[in-house]
Amino acid sequence: MAITSLIATGGAPVSGPETSRLVGFNTVWISGGSREVISLAVEADEAHFDSTTGAKSKNLTLDEDGQGHVRVCFVTSVNSPATTVLTAADDSPNAWKKVLSFAPLQAGPGKFLWYGAAVGASAGGGQYDSIFVDIDQNPDPVPMSMVAARAAGFGQVLDGDSSNDGKVLLLEDGCAEVRIVDGFPEAVMVRLSLPESPDGEILFVTCSFIADGLADAFAPLPPMQDAAGGVVRW
Picture 1 (cartoon, rainbow, N blue to C red):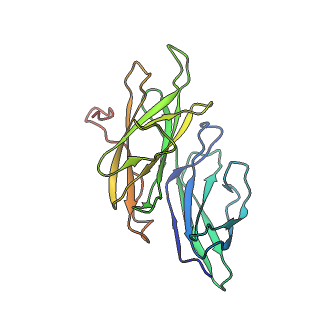
Picture 2 (cartoon, rainbow, N blue to C red):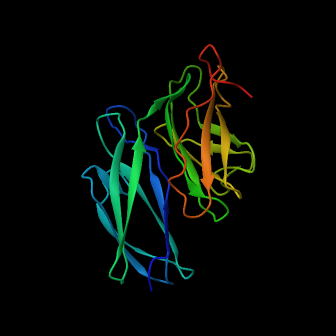
């Protein structure tokens, strides 16, 4: 048995406790043998599996179909680009290595305090891009409880993590992860809004889906803006 494929998103926002409550993750999908155990490790001291206090190494047991995934975050007090090297080893002599890239948190419009996106998932195979948002919870007039998402093209808000109309509930700290899937390799514009906000803030984020094996081909793009610097509305 051996690893046959390793695909990872890139550009997830760094997790900076001094900047934002937001925790961003790159997701790594691994294919191999049924029930195969994969040994994983990340090199950078700031990189962790599963949470900001998670381990720097772990074992992943693939399912009966030989599929599995892990998530990696990068914790830093500096809001700047960062990378770490992921190593995945099976029972063969060779290990797979993958550079995971992380991007600075971006300031959003209005109650969208901070956001970022992990992009470059494979199209058509159940993999997803993730958009991470940190929403202002000022109770004037009411604290926000949800963010609504709509994807262009063939993109869809992932079922199971949202209602059928694309509304994703915020966590208690005002943060949310919006997962987008697509059946075709393409760039997809995702429209994010706050249904409860009287100010009508709208944020556009570009997600990218690629053919298997080309996960590094795309980088996250900033939201579309008009000539005056405002966020373009649909």
